[in-house]
Image 1 (cartoon, rainbow, N blue to C red):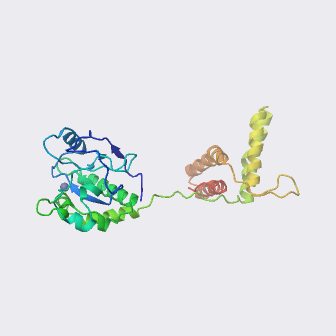
Image 2: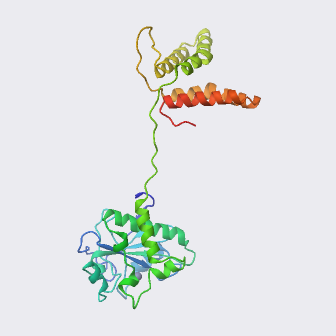
Image 3: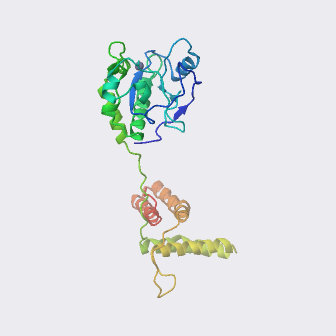
Length: 305
Ligand SMILES: [Zn+2]
């Protein structure tokens, strides 16, 4: 489950008996999730916030509205800091919820509404809807194949959601449930940091002979003691990464090459060398510069290029 794929916006309507009684689900955390659509093509999540914020003449609501731009909780669900509260999204006198789950949907379930139609991009809204349902199933250990009834399943004589919205894109409730199950299996991409490996001694020595020593002589002659010291350290870091003893007769453990040294060597010498070789069309030299840079990267535990 990729838990940060989308963000959840929480902007709650005011507590009022006909939309948000402010009482907690009797189950504490949600026991199942009812898949709804708004039955109001083209109306966004924000439109529904406004509608329920000002609704006075009847009892109706749901906790969550999802469109192609956002996942909006207008009544707390327990995904955030506030515990789940009741909403009025399935009639109390229907009995399927009691038969299947032992209680009324309003008392133990969340109502999750898919916004669709009009200018709403179905795919973008559907992907958020699937992810949100998966997120809830993951969080409260619900099986999506058994714990996401559609409103139509609970109240078939009056309702045709969420199926009617899915149908606009040729999808069924079964497609939705399997997509939710699949979403729960998705894993975040893992960046593998390779372990640093020893630099071949000949690579280290060649770099020291071809570039560092020459540069060291030049800056020393110019009286730049600071840069001379830096180049001296750079050469020693290469020796340590190649396990070349700094003192004759001593043994050197492998020491990872600092990444900044790799960047400097590549930027200062290998990359210009590669470009010059490319201009000349010298493929052998190009390969040499590439391979050398990758030896350095490996010695620093960086991915090769
Ligand atoms: Zn519904």
